[in-house]
View 1 (cartoon, rainbow, N blue to C red):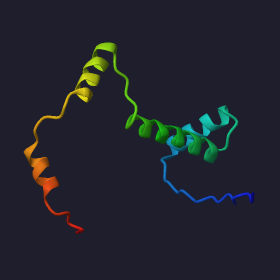
View 2 (view 1 turned 180 degrees about the vertical axis):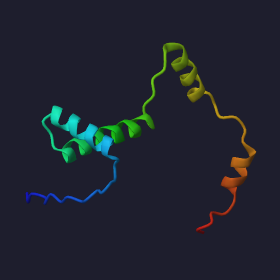
View 3 (view 1 turned 180 degrees about the horizontal axis):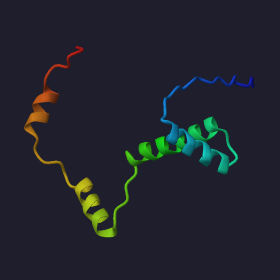
Length: 91
């Protein structure tokens, strides 16, 4: 199987000098370059943000209430019924 080429794409940003110095100090403490530190940190935060959109924690009582709501039959929704009975815009 051919190996995929690794491409890099530039990401340019501006930081104030104290911020850059802080980033540089943290990168040095981990033995990383500024770019390595920024990319790893930003990717970790991006993953956290995206997971927060899909993953949530509930205590037992809240989970039971959530599960009951999911299992309950849907109530009457006339607006949804009207929307679904109409002709689709692309038809």
